[in-house]
Length: 148
Ligand SMILES: [Zn+2]
Image (cartoon, rainbow, N blue to C red):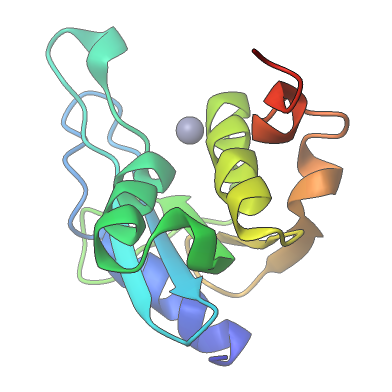
């Protein structure tokens, strides 16, 4: 597994590739597999605002293609002003509710209580949570075991 700082830096770098002309808020996400492979994603907004895609979803899609959701181990998220040469921002950015739901899906597929590292744009402040703490009692694939 990579150092937490490395994963946060990958998320911060990914945020610089965000397409966020409406909010001006760039978010990057880096996902590490159980084998140490890392993929990234950034938010992608749309003129039809509700069609915007979060960085976490972009990165989860990349993870699905690269190594499969069942191998997701750790996720770093960072957000802020991405208009300069480096991401900037003071507030620690945590995933929205929808992304927590999607991370839970990967976590239950992986059979891991996936670690989520949230950081500020500057990369100077982080908090680390398990997905079970970010979406307690969440509904996921484990709930469908009794389906017909
Ligand atoms: Zn989100």
